[in-house]
Image 1 (cartoon, rainbow, N blue to C red):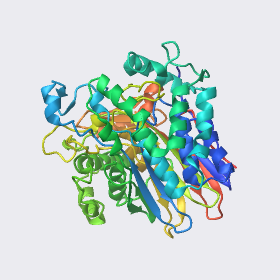
Image 2 (spheres, rainbow, N blue to C red; image 1 turned 45 degrees about the vertical axis):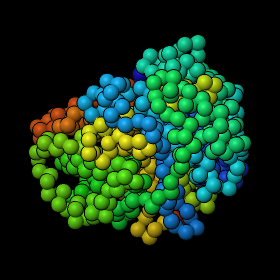
Image 3 (cartoon, one colour; image 1 turned 180 degrees about the horizontal axis):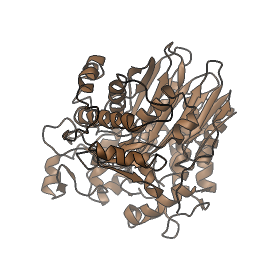
Length: 539
């Protein structure tokens, strides 16, 4: 498949509501709910469920979700943590005894020990309960219809589905294939098992998923592939509503979910960069790119240590997010030379996720993200359920004493992060996000700068090429997306960065985002990443 990602898209404008997702049919599902009078939360859950049907390469009810919600009536921002926990019977000692350890992680990222309790189902219903006005039956109806009738698959999704067919689905996830192969671009994919799962959730609530027949099938699937999850692990699951974290950037306030999510990395990066003059309108030039890379190194140095389950290892957020701390960290950046000796905190893995956002006609906004982690996660499908189980537990470290060390009943470091921006007067600017593993906070920082410093509209902000501090290398190899002046790679290399250009299908490294901006007069302006199959639509 050929990937060019050169956008010919205009920003989308509307007034009564807007949805932006990475699949056109999912955007349409969310818009259907808005037209029926649903809130931003109702439409977000509808779109998330529809993405289970048409983009299971990145998301599913067998994974986790996070959300930020802006309440137009009060101006308050709330955070939902819909992530699950490790089984009570799993610890590092068991991994050692079974010979499954490699370095500080479980050797096989698709092993059943990497399955944490799926949090999405509870997260969806809790979002509806707190911020919605429609029933789960109404909200899930478009996705159920799509799963039963089948829906055509987009070309980007088909490409990654074919890779997953070879990587993790064969022998454990055949239900997600068509006669042993991935669906082709434009081919209709039917998923009656997923429709049954959604109907059960709509009619029976959380109990139907966490204590009923679905729970029994999840446990049987995990244990069948060598895991230790039990019915009690699923029955004990609960979402949490938490206070979001934030910082100001040139007067605007950037909001993120708190740890165990890595939104902290985006805020730390922006805090450091705020102390430099804004970049050029056409940027980044080499100076701005150099500062971005160095700020990201410092941010990951901190987050790879401090981001963990706050129930067991709360991070010192007030100190980390203080402007005084940013002033100290900024002094570590040499103006013309890369600093490559930050070891702790280098990004270590990649993943797949879906990000979507909704703003309704009343001005409520939902920034929503849902993920299996590595594409189809483990690729394990509970019998007859139509979804794969995530492998988020691979993000635990087995290093003794580390805040993110694997422990029974603990939530792991999470890469998935929704973002939201409010204006200096506290009004909604808009929800935004960039999906894609450890690229996510890097994408958040770069998109926020495009919006705030460069004044770009949402579509133009997403169209701009990106930089990425690549995973698995402690000295932070730098990927430079095609679309930049080729001279930028050479210029970064002269400063000591191990920079290289990336083009074609490998550009999936740079993530895929969505943005909806709400102007003071209520006009909505949306954009959707050209690196994906989706779109923004409003009415």
